[in-house]
Amino acid sequence: MKIKTVEMRYEDVLTLPAAVHEKPIRQSIFFRTLLKVLSCIDLMRVGFTCSKIGMEKLSADEPCLVLMNHSSFIDLEIASSVLFPRSFHIVCTQDGFVGKKWLMRNLGCIPTKKFITDVALVRDMVYTVKELKSSILMYPEASYSFDGTATPLPESLGKCLKLLKVPVVMIRTRGAYLRDPLYNGLQIRNVTVSAEMEYLLSPEEIGEKSVEELNQILQSQFSFDHFKWQQENRVCIDEPFRADGLNRVLYKCPNCGGEGKMLGKGVKIACGLCKKEYELTEYGFLKAEEGTTEFSHIPDWYKWERECVKKELTDGTYRMELPVAIYMLVNTKCAYRVGTGILSHTKDGFHLTGCDGKLDYRQDPLSSYSLYSDFFWYEIGDVICIGNDKVQYYCFPQNCGDVVAKARLACEELYKLIRSGAEKK
Image (cartoon, rainbow, N blue to C red; front, side, top):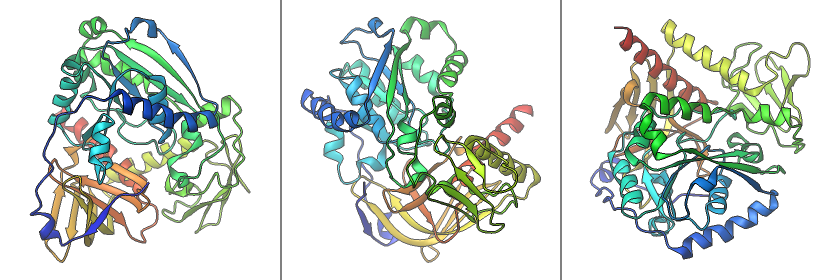
């Protein structure tokens, strides 16, 4: 999938009118049926099945909040199938509206800006359940998983449940991540996909529990490890490209400590500095070609990278400075290519400069608990997105090695360190 782009001067983009907020519109049975029919093609190919737990508690015309873990595009096809014929609106990122606003609105999509406080989104969600009498599908992680485990949830999620006062349904997928992991460059594997749909919380239970208790419940529900599931269920993935792009996630060599020099190709990932190689087996394990296998489990390697980033932050040595190509999003007409610049990330947050000295943007480390970063964003490249409620800057690192995953880890760990420090005071 691609996105419409236009080249324009930075100063001219700033003069463009912002997108006008519009309330969600009622999703028609035609578009619900269209989504269902189109989804059936892919779901038949993957032998899709869905088990349901406690769903008899939810009446057919009762609005609910559907929470779903986010692995790949097939998630929407799964939801469209298992929720049919229920009317539902989909919370999705604003860039998904670019060049196709009419279609997205009629499909029932509600735009939001990832990892940015969005008061309009809350109002739209309340309007959807109270006035349109429609359900809401939400991916609360807001980003695809890099390593096959859960990404952080917003602390405001429990408050959202209290505000909506509707039942909460959970959809958990199995096999969706393994079929199309984000790092693998849109190469589809032959994996069976299934889902489990569970009635999680009633309005009465939500009313009885505190925000903290609700957040704890949701955290436990969004605790998963897709590689562990593959290993325990002996799911064989024997495609010869299964390690392609794995360096995007495993960017740091555990043998020599070098960064940005790993290369995942075929069934192996290797360090370009010390030359150590690891095979990604057909059952999801890593195995060193020679010597010790430091991490046989991909999430363990990724967790080690997180700890390394955290140490850099606490030692005061963390710094990232990247030459980037810069795109801007100020409305839903297109993404504007405005030039090049330098994106820096330190303990003080992000600092973006460029466009012949006209652009100078800073973002405080407490502005968000995580980072909108992505691999192969709309087939343009790996991206780091920062910004506010008026404009988002999509920064594409140029010839920097693999830095996107590290930037996300650093953003999350920096937020936690500063928050914990402030709480201690």
